[in-house]
Image 1 (tube, chains in turn purple, green):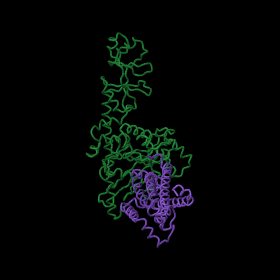
Image 2 (cartoon, one colour):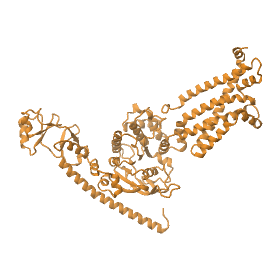
Image 3 (cartoon, one colour):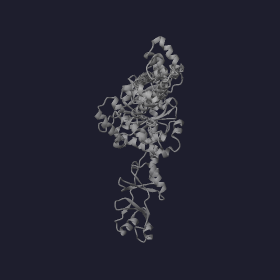
Image 4 (cartoon, one colour):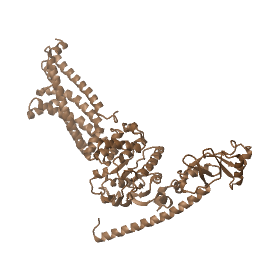
Length: 215
Length: 416
Protein backbone atom coordinates (compact mmCIF):
# COMPACT_ATOMS: atom_id res chain seq x y z
CA UNK A 1 0.00 0.00 0.00
CA UNK A 2 1.58 3.30 -0.95
CA UNK A 3 1.12 6.50 1.04
CA UNK A 4 -1.77 7.83 -1.03
CA UNK A 5 -3.71 4.60 -0.80
CA UNK A 6 -3.11 4.66 2.94
CA UNK A 7 -4.46 8.18 3.15
CA UNK A 8 -7.62 7.41 1.22
CA UNK A 9 -8.23 4.24 3.24
CA UNK A 10 -7.77 5.89 6.60
CA UNK A 11 -8.93 9.39 5.91
CA UNK A 12 -11.83 9.06 8.32
CA UNK A 13 -9.57 8.13 11.20
CA UNK A 14 -6.95 10.71 10.18
CA UNK A 15 -9.46 13.53 10.02
CA UNK A 16 -10.79 12.64 13.45
CA UNK A 17 -7.27 12.60 14.85
CA UNK A 18 -6.42 15.87 13.15
CA UNK A 19 -9.59 17.47 14.44
CA UNK A 20 -8.87 16.31 17.98
CA UNK A 21 -5.27 17.45 17.70
CA UNK A 22 -6.31 20.91 16.54
CA UNK A 23 -9.04 21.13 19.11
CA UNK A 24 -6.70 20.14 21.96
CA UNK A 25 -4.08 22.66 20.88
CA UNK A 26 -6.70 25.37 20.41
CA UNK A 27 -8.27 24.88 23.81
CA UNK A 28 -4.94 24.68 25.56
CA UNK A 29 -3.85 27.86 23.75
CA UNK A 30 -6.93 29.70 24.95
CA UNK A 31 -6.19 28.60 28.51
CA UNK A 32 -2.47 29.39 28.18
CA UNK A 33 -3.24 32.83 26.71
CA UNK A 34 -5.63 33.78 29.47
CA UNK A 35 -3.33 32.51 32.21
CA UNK A 36 -0.16 33.80 30.54
CA UNK A 37 -1.47 37.33 29.98
CA UNK A 38 -2.82 37.43 33.53
CA UNK A 39 0.58 36.38 34.87
CA UNK A 40 2.18 39.03 32.67
CA UNK A 41 -0.19 41.73 33.99
CA UNK A 42 0.50 40.77 37.59
CA UNK A 43 4.26 40.52 37.07
CA UNK A 44 5.30 43.31 34.69
CA UNK A 45 5.32 46.19 37.16
CA UNK A 46 8.10 44.89 39.35
CA UNK A 47 11.55 43.70 38.37
CA UNK A 48 11.48 40.68 40.68
CA UNK A 49 7.95 39.75 39.63
CA UNK A 50 8.91 39.76 35.98
CA UNK A 51 12.02 37.65 36.48
CA UNK A 52 10.16 35.25 38.75
CA UNK A 53 7.44 34.73 36.13
CA UNK A 54 9.92 34.30 33.27
CA UNK A 55 12.17 31.94 35.21
CA UNK A 56 9.29 29.82 36.46
CA UNK A 57 7.75 29.41 33.03
CA UNK A 58 11.05 28.70 31.32
CA UNK A 59 11.85 26.09 33.97
CA UNK A 60 8.63 24.32 33.01
CA UNK A 61 9.80 24.38 29.41
CA UNK A 62 13.04 22.57 30.27
CA UNK A 63 11.17 19.51 31.61
CA UNK A 64 11.13 16.94 28.81
CA UNK A 65 7.58 16.58 27.57
CA UNK A 66 7.56 12.81 27.89
CA UNK A 67 8.67 13.11 31.50
CA UNK A 68 6.10 15.76 32.24
CA UNK A 69 3.25 13.65 30.94
CA UNK A 70 4.69 10.60 32.67
CA UNK A 71 4.76 12.51 35.94
CA UNK A 72 1.22 13.75 35.50
CA UNK A 73 -0.31 10.30 34.86
CA UNK A 74 -0.12 9.07 38.47
CA UNK A 75 -1.66 12.35 39.64
CA UNK A 76 -4.50 12.97 37.16
CA UNK A 77 -4.78 9.66 35.34
CA UNK A 78 -4.68 8.84 31.63
CA UNK A 79 -6.30 10.54 28.64
CA UNK A 80 -7.28 14.16 28.29
CA UNK A 81 -6.35 15.67 31.69
CA UNK A 82 -2.55 15.15 31.53
CA UNK A 83 -2.53 16.33 27.91
CA UNK A 84 -4.37 19.53 28.65
CA UNK A 85 -2.32 20.33 31.75
CA UNK A 86 1.01 19.64 30.05
CA UNK A 87 0.17 21.60 26.90
CA UNK A 88 -1.12 24.59 28.84
CA UNK A 89 2.00 24.70 31.00
CA UNK A 90 4.30 24.46 27.98
CA UNK A 91 2.41 27.16 26.17
CA UNK A 92 2.89 29.67 28.96
CA UNK A 93 6.49 30.80 28.49
CA UNK A 94 6.32 32.67 25.18
CA UNK A 95 3.05 34.30 26.19
CA UNK A 96 4.19 35.35 29.65
CA UNK A 97 7.49 36.65 28.35
CA UNK A 98 5.98 38.57 25.45
CA UNK A 99 3.22 39.98 27.66
CA UNK A 100 5.82 41.32 30.06
CA UNK A 101 7.99 42.67 27.27
CA UNK A 102 4.95 44.18 25.52
CA UNK A 103 3.48 45.80 28.61
CA UNK A 104 6.85 47.16 29.64
CA UNK A 105 7.43 48.48 26.15
CA UNK A 106 4.45 50.83 26.35
CA UNK A 107 5.78 54.39 26.28
CA UNK A 108 5.72 55.66 29.88
CA UNK A 109 4.53 59.08 28.70
CA UNK A 110 1.42 57.39 27.27
CA UNK A 111 0.75 55.72 30.59
CA UNK A 112 1.24 59.12 32.20
CA UNK A 113 -1.18 60.69 29.70
CA UNK A 114 -3.76 57.97 30.29
CA UNK A 115 -3.63 58.50 34.04
CA UNK A 116 -3.55 62.25 33.56
CA UNK A 117 -6.77 62.40 31.57
CA UNK A 118 -8.55 60.46 34.30
CA UNK A 119 -8.41 56.76 33.43
CA UNK A 120 -8.68 54.32 36.31
CA UNK A 121 -6.01 51.64 36.55
CA UNK A 122 -8.21 48.98 34.99
CA UNK A 123 -9.34 51.26 32.19
CA UNK A 124 -5.76 52.23 31.45
CA UNK A 125 -4.82 48.56 31.20
CA UNK A 126 -7.74 47.62 28.97
CA UNK A 127 -7.88 50.72 26.75
CA UNK A 128 -4.22 51.65 26.45
CA UNK A 129 -1.65 49.19 27.73
CA UNK A 130 -3.05 45.89 26.46
CA UNK A 131 -3.93 47.17 22.96
CA UNK A 132 -0.42 48.58 22.60
CA UNK A 133 1.18 45.39 23.96
CA UNK A 134 -1.06 43.21 21.80
CA UNK A 135 1.26 42.76 18.76
CA UNK A 136 4.08 41.18 20.82
CA UNK A 137 1.57 39.14 22.81
CA UNK A 138 0.08 37.81 19.57
CA UNK A 139 3.58 36.87 18.40
CA UNK A 140 4.03 34.98 21.65
CA UNK A 141 0.76 33.16 21.03
CA UNK A 142 1.93 32.19 17.54
CA UNK A 143 5.21 30.80 18.81
CA UNK A 144 3.41 28.92 21.58
CA UNK A 145 0.95 27.39 19.15
CA UNK A 146 3.66 26.04 16.88
CA UNK A 147 5.48 24.59 19.84
CA UNK A 148 2.32 22.96 21.19
CA UNK A 149 1.53 21.40 17.81
CA UNK A 150 4.64 19.28 18.16
CA UNK A 151 4.38 18.63 21.87
CA UNK A 152 0.74 17.57 21.50
CA UNK A 153 1.92 14.52 19.58
CA UNK A 154 3.54 13.22 22.77
CA UNK A 155 0.10 13.24 24.41
CA UNK A 156 -0.67 9.95 22.71
CA UNK A 157 1.76 8.40 25.14
CA UNK A 158 -0.80 9.03 27.86
CA UNK A 159 -3.62 7.83 25.62
CA UNK A 160 -4.40 11.44 24.82
CA UNK A 161 -6.11 12.60 21.66
CA UNK A 162 -4.55 13.68 18.38
CA UNK A 163 -2.25 12.82 15.51
CA UNK A 164 0.36 11.59 17.94
CA UNK A 165 -1.57 8.32 18.01
CA UNK A 166 -0.70 7.75 14.33
CA UNK A 167 2.97 8.37 15.00
CA UNK A 168 3.12 6.19 18.09
CA UNK A 169 1.28 3.39 16.31
CA UNK A 170 3.75 3.60 13.48
CA UNK A 171 6.76 3.58 15.78
CA UNK A 172 5.25 0.71 17.78
CA UNK A 173 4.91 -1.47 14.71
CA UNK A 174 8.16 -0.61 12.97
CA UNK A 175 8.84 -3.07 10.16
CA UNK A 176 5.18 -3.64 9.36
CA UNK A 177 4.08 -2.38 5.95
CA UNK A 178 2.07 0.58 7.20
CA UNK A 179 4.50 1.79 9.87
CA UNK A 180 6.17 4.41 7.70
CA UNK A 181 2.85 5.57 6.29
CA UNK A 182 1.46 6.07 9.78
CA UNK A 183 4.42 8.08 11.00
CA UNK A 184 4.43 10.14 7.80
CA UNK A 185 0.69 10.82 7.90
CA UNK A 186 0.86 11.93 11.52
CA UNK A 187 3.85 14.19 10.97
CA UNK A 188 2.57 15.79 7.79
CA UNK A 189 -0.81 16.26 9.40
CA UNK A 190 0.80 18.19 12.25
CA UNK A 191 2.78 20.37 9.84
CA UNK A 192 -0.34 21.19 7.83
CA UNK A 193 -2.27 22.03 10.98
CA UNK A 194 0.56 24.29 12.15
CA UNK A 195 0.51 26.16 8.84
CA UNK A 196 -3.28 26.55 8.97
CA UNK A 197 -3.09 27.92 12.50
CA UNK A 198 -0.36 30.33 11.46
CA UNK A 199 -2.50 31.60 8.59
CA UNK A 200 -5.34 32.09 11.05
CA UNK A 201 -3.06 34.18 13.28
CA UNK A 202 -2.08 36.42 10.42
CA UNK A 203 -5.78 37.02 9.83
CA UNK A 204 -6.43 37.62 13.54
CA UNK A 205 -3.55 40.11 13.57
CA UNK A 206 -5.08 41.99 10.64
CA UNK A 207 -8.41 42.17 12.42
CA UNK A 208 -7.26 42.98 15.94
CA UNK A 209 -4.18 45.17 15.63
CA UNK A 210 -5.13 48.81 15.16
CA UNK A 211 -4.13 50.38 11.87
CA UNK A 212 -2.43 53.08 13.86
CA UNK A 213 0.27 50.73 15.20
CA UNK A 214 0.43 48.08 12.50
CA UNK A 215 3.93 47.79 11.07
CA UNK B 1 -13.98 84.81 40.03
CA UNK B 2 -14.71 83.67 36.48
CA UNK B 3 -14.05 86.08 33.68
CA UNK B 4 -16.90 86.89 31.29
CA UNK B 5 -17.64 83.66 29.48
CA UNK B 6 -17.30 83.00 25.77
CA UNK B 7 -20.49 81.31 24.68
CA UNK B 8 -21.52 78.36 26.84
CA UNK B 9 -18.00 77.16 27.61
CA UNK B 10 -16.83 76.70 31.18
CA UNK B 11 -14.39 79.40 32.17
CA UNK B 12 -11.49 79.14 34.53
CA UNK B 13 -11.45 78.40 38.22
CA UNK B 14 -8.99 79.61 40.81
CA UNK B 15 -6.19 77.32 41.93
CA UNK B 16 -4.71 77.68 45.38
CA UNK B 17 -1.63 75.82 46.45
CA UNK B 18 -1.17 75.93 50.17
CA UNK B 19 2.24 74.89 51.54
CA UNK B 20 2.41 72.11 48.96
CA UNK B 21 5.27 69.71 49.66
CA UNK B 22 6.59 66.53 48.13
CA UNK B 23 9.22 64.43 49.79
CA UNK B 24 10.13 61.25 47.95
CA UNK B 25 10.66 58.26 50.18
CA UNK B 26 14.35 57.69 50.79
CA UNK B 27 15.43 61.24 50.14
CA UNK B 28 15.92 63.79 52.85
CA UNK B 29 15.55 66.96 50.76
CA UNK B 30 12.03 67.66 49.53
CA UNK B 31 11.57 67.75 45.74
CA UNK B 32 8.98 70.46 46.24
CA UNK B 33 9.20 72.44 49.41
CA UNK B 34 6.32 74.36 50.87
CA UNK B 35 4.98 76.03 47.74
CA UNK B 36 2.10 78.43 48.22
CA UNK B 37 0.56 80.38 45.40
CA UNK B 38 -2.73 81.65 44.24
CA UNK B 39 -3.65 81.43 40.58
CA UNK B 40 -6.51 83.61 39.50
CA UNK B 41 -9.38 82.31 37.43
CA UNK B 42 -8.80 82.69 33.71
CA UNK B 43 -5.12 83.52 33.81
CA UNK B 44 -2.16 81.74 32.26
CA UNK B 45 0.54 81.12 34.82
CA UNK B 46 3.88 79.81 33.66
CA UNK B 47 6.21 77.76 35.85
CA UNK B 48 9.67 78.36 34.54
CA UNK B 49 12.97 77.21 35.95
CA UNK B 50 16.02 75.06 35.32
CA UNK B 51 15.51 71.32 34.83
CA UNK B 52 15.19 69.44 38.07
CA UNK B 53 13.81 72.42 39.97
CA UNK B 54 10.54 70.61 40.63
CA UNK B 55 8.32 72.66 38.34
CA UNK B 56 6.91 69.55 36.66
CA UNK B 57 6.44 67.84 40.01
CA UNK B 58 4.54 70.86 41.27
CA UNK B 59 2.31 70.79 38.19
CA UNK B 60 1.65 67.07 38.51
CA UNK B 61 0.59 67.56 42.11
CA UNK B 62 -2.26 69.78 40.95
CA UNK B 63 -3.97 66.80 39.27
CA UNK B 64 -2.33 64.48 41.79
CA UNK B 65 -0.43 62.41 39.26
CA UNK B 66 2.09 62.85 42.03
CA UNK B 67 0.54 62.73 45.47
CA UNK B 68 1.71 65.58 47.69
CA UNK B 69 3.15 64.61 51.05
CA UNK B 70 2.00 67.84 52.63
CA UNK B 71 -0.13 70.90 51.99
CA UNK B 72 -3.50 71.45 50.36
CA UNK B 73 -4.72 72.05 46.82
CA UNK B 74 -7.92 73.96 46.19
CA UNK B 75 -9.52 74.33 42.76
CA UNK B 76 -12.35 76.82 42.50
CA UNK B 77 -12.38 77.01 46.29
CA UNK B 78 -12.95 73.26 46.64
CA UNK B 79 -10.34 71.24 48.49
CA UNK B 80 -9.30 68.46 46.11
CA UNK B 81 -6.39 67.09 48.13
CA UNK B 82 -8.38 64.07 49.31
CA UNK B 83 -10.80 63.77 46.41
CA UNK B 84 -10.88 60.63 44.22
CA UNK B 85 -7.96 61.39 41.86
CA UNK B 86 -9.67 59.79 38.86
CA UNK B 87 -12.66 62.11 39.26
CA UNK B 88 -10.40 65.10 39.82
CA UNK B 89 -8.39 64.44 36.65
CA UNK B 90 -11.51 64.34 34.49
CA UNK B 91 -12.16 67.91 35.54
CA UNK B 92 -8.62 69.06 34.85
CA UNK B 93 -7.32 69.06 31.28
CA UNK B 94 -3.82 67.66 30.85
CA UNK B 95 -1.53 68.14 27.86
CA UNK B 96 2.05 66.87 27.74
CA UNK B 97 5.16 67.03 25.63
CA UNK B 98 4.90 65.29 22.24
CA UNK B 99 1.12 65.26 22.78
CA UNK B 100 0.89 61.76 24.31
CA UNK B 101 -1.73 60.67 21.82
CA UNK B 102 -2.65 57.01 21.90
CA UNK B 103 -1.27 55.65 18.63
CA UNK B 104 -3.83 52.85 18.32
CA UNK B 105 -6.75 55.25 18.36
CA UNK B 106 -7.84 57.70 15.69
CA UNK B 107 -7.76 61.44 16.28
CA UNK B 108 -11.50 61.39 16.98
CA UNK B 109 -11.21 58.47 19.40
CA UNK B 110 -8.38 60.19 21.26
CA UNK B 111 -10.42 63.35 21.72
CA UNK B 112 -13.59 61.46 22.61
CA UNK B 113 -11.95 59.52 25.46
CA UNK B 114 -12.69 61.83 28.36
CA UNK B 115 -16.28 62.74 27.34
CA UNK B 116 -16.91 59.01 26.89
CA UNK B 117 -15.58 58.25 30.35
CA UNK B 118 -17.78 60.95 31.84
CA UNK B 119 -20.74 59.36 30.09
CA UNK B 120 -21.77 61.93 27.52
CA UNK B 121 -24.34 60.76 24.96
CA UNK B 122 -22.89 59.72 21.58
CA UNK B 123 -24.33 62.55 19.54
CA UNK B 124 -22.93 65.14 21.92
CA UNK B 125 -19.47 63.55 21.84
CA UNK B 126 -19.50 63.54 18.06
CA UNK B 127 -20.44 67.20 17.88
CA UNK B 128 -17.85 68.05 20.52
CA UNK B 129 -15.05 66.31 18.58
CA UNK B 130 -15.87 68.30 15.44
CA UNK B 131 -16.09 71.51 17.42
CA UNK B 132 -12.72 70.95 19.08
CA UNK B 133 -10.91 70.03 15.88
CA UNK B 134 -12.25 73.20 14.40
CA UNK B 135 -11.17 75.16 17.47
CA UNK B 136 -7.55 73.99 17.24
CA UNK B 137 -7.45 74.71 13.54
CA UNK B 138 -7.71 71.22 12.03
CA UNK B 139 -10.29 70.40 9.39
CA UNK B 140 -12.63 67.85 11.06
CA UNK B 141 -13.46 66.07 7.80
CA UNK B 142 -9.82 65.54 6.98
CA UNK B 143 -8.35 64.70 10.38
CA UNK B 144 -11.22 62.91 12.12
CA UNK B 145 -10.25 59.40 11.08
CA UNK B 146 -6.48 59.75 10.96
CA UNK B 147 -4.09 57.97 13.26
CA UNK B 148 -1.53 60.00 15.22
CA UNK B 149 1.38 58.68 13.18
CA UNK B 150 -0.20 60.19 10.08
CA UNK B 151 0.08 63.66 11.61
CA UNK B 152 3.00 66.08 11.85
CA UNK B 153 4.37 66.98 15.27
CA UNK B 154 2.50 70.28 15.32
CA UNK B 155 -0.77 68.64 14.32
CA UNK B 156 -0.34 66.00 17.01
CA UNK B 157 0.19 68.74 19.56
CA UNK B 158 -3.02 70.45 18.44
CA UNK B 159 -4.93 67.21 18.88
CA UNK B 160 -3.31 66.87 22.30
CA UNK B 161 -4.66 70.28 23.27
CA UNK B 162 -8.08 69.36 21.84
CA UNK B 163 -8.10 66.21 23.96
CA UNK B 164 -7.17 68.17 27.06
CA UNK B 165 -10.08 70.52 26.39
CA UNK B 166 -12.54 67.79 25.43
CA UNK B 167 -14.67 67.67 28.57
CA UNK B 168 -14.53 71.46 28.86
CA UNK B 169 -12.52 71.55 32.11
CA UNK B 170 -12.09 74.86 33.93
CA UNK B 171 -8.41 74.17 34.47
CA UNK B 172 -5.77 73.14 31.96
CA UNK B 173 -2.34 71.81 32.93
CA UNK B 174 0.32 71.84 30.23
CA UNK B 175 3.66 70.15 30.84
CA UNK B 176 6.19 71.49 28.31
CA UNK B 177 3.61 70.90 25.60
CA UNK B 178 5.58 72.52 22.79
CA UNK B 179 8.99 71.24 23.84
CA UNK B 180 9.34 68.67 21.09
CA UNK B 181 8.33 70.62 17.99
CA UNK B 182 10.49 72.74 15.70
CA UNK B 183 10.84 76.48 16.48
CA UNK B 184 8.56 77.66 13.68
CA UNK B 185 5.76 75.27 14.58
CA UNK B 186 6.26 76.13 18.24
CA UNK B 187 5.79 79.79 17.44
CA UNK B 188 2.53 78.98 15.63
CA UNK B 189 1.29 76.81 18.45
CA UNK B 190 2.03 79.53 20.97
CA UNK B 191 0.06 82.04 18.91
CA UNK B 192 -2.79 79.54 18.67
CA UNK B 193 -2.79 79.01 22.40
CA UNK B 194 -2.99 82.75 23.00
CA UNK B 195 -5.88 83.00 20.55
CA UNK B 196 -7.65 80.01 22.15
CA UNK B 197 -7.28 81.53 25.58
CA UNK B 198 -8.87 84.77 24.37
CA UNK B 199 -11.95 82.70 23.50
CA UNK B 200 -11.97 80.26 26.38
CA UNK B 201 -10.66 82.03 29.50
CA UNK B 202 -9.49 78.82 31.13
CA UNK B 203 -7.10 78.80 34.02
CA UNK B 204 -3.90 77.47 32.50
CA UNK B 205 -0.80 76.33 34.32
CA UNK B 206 2.02 75.88 31.84
CA UNK B 207 5.46 74.44 32.53
CA UNK B 208 8.44 75.33 30.38
CA UNK B 209 12.16 75.87 30.66
CA UNK B 210 12.11 78.37 27.81
CA UNK B 211 11.91 81.87 29.25
CA UNK B 212 11.03 83.43 25.91
CA UNK B 213 8.06 81.10 25.68
CA UNK B 214 7.11 82.11 29.21
CA UNK B 215 7.09 85.85 28.50
CA UNK B 216 5.24 85.32 25.25
CA UNK B 217 2.22 83.47 26.61
CA UNK B 218 2.19 84.08 30.34
CA UNK B 219 -0.08 86.49 32.18
CA UNK B 220 2.14 85.85 35.16
CA UNK B 221 5.35 83.90 35.48
CA UNK B 222 6.60 81.99 38.47
CA UNK B 223 10.36 81.65 38.27
CA UNK B 224 11.25 78.58 40.31
CA UNK B 225 14.58 77.54 41.76
CA UNK B 226 15.51 74.24 43.42
CA UNK B 227 12.83 72.57 45.53
CA UNK B 228 10.33 74.64 43.56
CA UNK B 229 11.01 77.68 45.73
CA UNK B 230 9.40 80.71 44.11
CA UNK B 231 12.13 83.16 43.21
CA UNK B 232 9.71 85.62 41.65
CA UNK B 233 6.03 85.47 40.74
CA UNK B 234 5.00 88.41 38.64
CA UNK B 235 3.99 89.68 35.25
CA UNK B 236 6.48 89.18 32.40
CA UNK B 237 6.99 92.95 32.22
CA UNK B 238 7.93 93.20 35.87
CA UNK B 239 10.28 90.23 35.77
CA UNK B 240 12.05 91.59 32.70
CA UNK B 241 12.46 95.05 34.13
CA UNK B 242 13.11 94.23 37.72
CA UNK B 243 14.32 90.70 38.35
CA UNK B 244 14.11 89.92 42.06
CA UNK B 245 17.64 88.55 42.36
CA UNK B 246 20.65 87.24 40.46
CA UNK B 247 19.02 83.88 39.92
CA UNK B 248 16.07 85.44 38.13
CA UNK B 249 18.17 87.84 36.10
CA UNK B 250 20.39 84.92 35.11
CA UNK B 251 17.31 83.13 33.93
CA UNK B 252 15.91 86.13 32.11
CA UNK B 253 19.16 86.17 30.19
CA UNK B 254 20.74 88.94 28.19
CA UNK B 255 18.68 91.46 26.31
CA UNK B 256 15.85 91.88 28.79
CA UNK B 257 15.02 95.32 27.37
CA UNK B 258 14.84 93.87 23.86
CA UNK B 259 12.63 91.04 25.09
CA UNK B 260 10.45 93.65 26.73
CA UNK B 261 9.76 95.09 23.28
CA UNK B 262 7.99 91.83 22.40
CA UNK B 263 5.37 92.51 25.03
CA UNK B 264 4.16 95.84 23.78
CA UNK B 265 2.26 96.44 20.59
CA UNK B 266 2.49 99.37 18.25
CA UNK B 267 -1.05 100.36 19.26
CA UNK B 268 0.23 101.05 22.78
CA UNK B 269 2.68 103.74 21.70
CA UNK B 270 2.14 107.14 20.19
CA UNK B 271 1.72 107.10 16.43
CA UNK B 272 2.58 110.41 14.81
CA UNK B 273 0.64 111.83 11.96
CA UNK B 274 2.53 112.53 8.79
CA UNK B 275 1.70 114.77 5.84
CA UNK B 276 0.31 112.64 3.05
CA UNK B 277 -0.85 113.06 -0.48
CA UNK B 278 -2.52 110.61 -2.80
CA UNK B 279 -1.70 109.60 -6.34
CA UNK B 280 -4.88 111.33 -7.47
CA UNK B 281 -3.83 114.73 -6.16
CA UNK B 282 -2.68 117.20 -8.86
CA UNK B 283 1.11 117.69 -9.04
CA UNK B 284 0.83 121.33 -8.02
CA UNK B 285 -0.95 120.36 -4.85
CA UNK B 286 1.79 117.87 -4.03
CA UNK B 287 4.44 120.58 -4.57
CA UNK B 288 2.60 122.93 -2.27
CA UNK B 289 2.22 120.35 0.46
CA UNK B 290 5.89 119.43 0.26
CA UNK B 291 6.90 123.04 0.57
CA UNK B 292 4.33 123.80 3.24
CA UNK B 293 5.03 120.81 5.49
CA UNK B 294 7.48 121.14 8.32
CA UNK B 295 9.09 117.84 7.46
CA UNK B 296 11.45 117.31 4.67
CA UNK B 297 9.34 114.49 3.41
CA UNK B 298 5.83 113.51 2.48
CA UNK B 299 4.14 110.13 2.18
CA UNK B 300 2.47 109.33 -1.10
CA UNK B 301 -0.51 106.96 -0.83
CA UNK B 302 -1.87 104.83 -3.62
CA UNK B 303 -5.52 104.84 -4.79
CA UNK B 304 -6.64 102.64 -1.89
CA UNK B 305 -4.94 104.79 0.70
CA UNK B 306 -2.00 102.45 1.21
CA UNK B 307 1.53 103.84 1.72
CA UNK B 308 3.27 103.84 -1.64
CA UNK B 309 6.29 106.13 -1.76
CA UNK B 310 8.31 108.48 0.40
CA UNK B 311 8.82 111.79 -1.44
CA UNK B 312 11.58 114.24 -0.51
CA UNK B 313 11.71 117.82 -1.58
CA UNK B 314 14.19 117.37 -4.38
CA UNK B 315 12.75 114.13 -5.65
CA UNK B 316 10.08 115.61 -7.86
CA UNK B 317 12.48 118.10 -9.47
CA UNK B 318 14.98 115.42 -10.22
CA UNK B 319 12.32 113.20 -11.75
CA UNK B 320 11.11 116.20 -13.80
CA UNK B 321 7.68 116.10 -12.27
CA UNK B 322 6.97 112.42 -12.97
CA UNK B 323 5.41 110.74 -9.93
CA UNK B 324 6.18 107.33 -11.38
CA UNK B 325 9.92 107.94 -11.21
CA UNK B 326 10.16 110.13 -8.12
CA UNK B 327 10.84 109.06 -4.52
CA UNK B 328 11.60 105.76 -2.79
CA UNK B 329 9.14 102.89 -2.59
CA UNK B 330 7.78 102.00 0.86
CA UNK B 331 9.49 98.69 1.55
CA UNK B 332 8.10 97.77 4.94
CA UNK B 333 5.04 98.61 7.00
CA UNK B 334 3.79 97.42 10.37
CA UNK B 335 0.26 97.00 11.71
CA UNK B 336 -0.98 98.21 15.07
CA UNK B 337 -0.84 94.57 16.25
CA UNK B 338 2.87 94.27 15.52
CA UNK B 339 5.20 94.16 18.51
CA UNK B 340 7.54 97.04 19.20
CA UNK B 341 10.35 94.68 18.34
CA UNK B 342 8.97 94.25 14.82
CA UNK B 343 8.60 98.02 14.58
CA UNK B 344 12.17 98.57 15.76
CA UNK B 345 13.40 96.06 13.21
CA UNK B 346 11.57 97.92 10.45
CA UNK B 347 12.80 101.30 11.63
CA UNK B 348 16.39 100.06 11.80
CA UNK B 349 16.33 98.65 8.28
CA UNK B 350 14.78 101.81 6.87
CA UNK B 351 17.49 104.33 6.03
CA UNK B 352 15.45 107.28 7.26
CA UNK B 353 14.51 105.76 10.61
CA UNK B 354 10.72 105.60 10.40
CA UNK B 355 8.06 103.13 9.40
CA UNK B 356 4.47 103.55 8.26
CA UNK B 357 1.74 102.00 10.37
CA UNK B 358 -1.14 100.46 8.45
CA UNK B 359 -4.61 99.26 9.25
CA UNK B 360 -6.20 95.94 8.53
CA UNK B 361 -6.47 96.40 4.78
CA UNK B 362 -3.06 98.00 4.49
CA UNK B 363 -4.41 101.56 4.62
CA UNK B 364 -2.22 104.29 6.10
CA UNK B 365 -2.76 105.13 9.77
CA UNK B 366 0.36 106.92 10.90
CA UNK B 367 4.09 106.69 11.34
CA UNK B 368 6.38 105.44 14.07
CA UNK B 369 9.91 106.77 14.19
CA UNK B 370 13.03 106.10 16.18
CA UNK B 371 12.44 108.91 18.61
CA UNK B 372 8.92 107.75 19.51
CA UNK B 373 10.18 104.23 20.02
CA UNK B 374 13.00 105.26 22.32
CA UNK B 375 10.76 107.50 24.39
CA UNK B 376 8.03 104.86 24.71
CA UNK B 377 10.48 102.18 25.75
CA UNK B 378 11.90 104.45 28.42
CA UNK B 379 8.46 105.16 29.78
CA UNK B 380 7.52 101.48 29.70
CA UNK B 381 10.62 100.38 31.54
CA UNK B 382 10.12 103.03 34.18
CA UNK B 383 6.50 102.04 34.76
CA UNK B 384 7.44 98.35 34.93
CA UNK B 385 10.10 99.09 37.48
CA UNK B 386 7.64 100.81 39.75
CA UNK B 387 5.12 97.97 39.38
CA UNK B 388 7.72 95.33 40.09
CA UNK B 389 8.89 97.11 43.21
CA UNK B 390 5.35 97.22 44.47
CA UNK B 391 4.75 93.49 43.77
CA UNK B 392 8.00 92.58 45.39
CA UNK B 393 7.00 94.48 48.44
CA UNK B 394 3.68 92.59 48.55
CA UNK B 395 5.47 89.24 48.18
CA UNK B 396 7.78 90.10 51.03
CA UNK B 397 4.89 91.04 53.23
CA UNK B 398 3.12 87.80 52.35
CA UNK B 399 6.25 85.84 53.14
CA UNK B 400 6.82 87.46 56.47
CA UNK B 401 3.17 86.91 57.33
CA UNK B 402 3.60 83.24 56.46
CA UNK B 403 6.71 82.79 58.52
CA UNK B 404 5.00 84.54 61.34
CA UNK B 405 2.00 82.24 61.12
CA UNK B 406 4.26 79.19 60.95
CA UNK B 407 6.18 80.21 64.00
CA UNK B 408 2.99 80.80 65.91
CA UNK B 409 1.70 77.42 64.73
CA UNK B 410 4.91 75.73 65.84
CA UNK B 411 4.67 77.38 69.22
CA UNK B 412 1.08 76.23 69.56
CA UNK B 413 2.40 72.70 69.03
CA UNK B 414 0.12 71.78 66.14
CA UNK B 415 0.49 72.55 62.49
CA UNK B 416 -1.81 71.69 59.63
